[in-house]
Length: 360
Image (tube, rainbow, N blue to C red):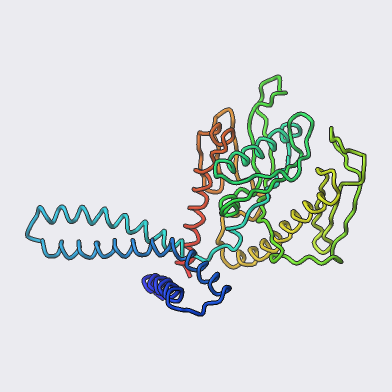
């Protein structure tokens, strides 16, 4: 099917749904909900298609004008200039439409669970992990998303051994999914007396929040242990057996939760995280199978890869996957202004997917 035919098919489907909603008297509630949902999903792309068709019609008129005005140099020059500008706009609109027509990641519209863990670098790695966690909290706030802290394991000097949060809002996972990986920091630690630059690391995992329909967990596959919470300064430490550890036996995935005083609340949080890890595990396995045949992602699934470096002495942030360097480290880290990095990653991802489709 040609590109133009695909566009016409979308407009025909929109028109058919609108006609069904307006003219039919016997629409059931379930059908009405499905039709209005489909119509809403088609709204944005239908507007883009109509604008694109209007532009291509103008393009055709200009070409005819150029052909008919070969003897009028002034009109010819103006028309050719206008056509060059229009060609550029149409090329951009066409790419945007092709991206919109790409198969969607079913998880893109989901909320996300973020897990940040200190890596190599001792206390400095813990401080960096805490800084990354704060950066994502600010990025969520910048997008009017809600950020709920699920668990914190502190180092006692302001750092985190690990931290987990739930981010809820519109299309959260689609924006954050490329943040998974090893983040490296280069700077002089506060505890360093000689002024030497140290390199530390932290890992970030972004998981789509799983709903009950996304993953099926059988009770026989779980081992649930309860124990007394431990850690620095917790007021419920060693008082009751409120901490919960859940092991998913088939995969070995383990989740521990002890932040709440209530064993019931800890178990509920642990199950939420476990479901999301299992959902991500299943997605990763499917993605690995697809990637073995053709590479259609920005290596976002391999969390062993170093993806980004934050160099404080030079004031730069470098994303190694797309060779992007920005000298805006304070804006990015302190204010959570990640838009430029994330938009570049998404654009590169879409370009690679389009290239893969063209190669088929």
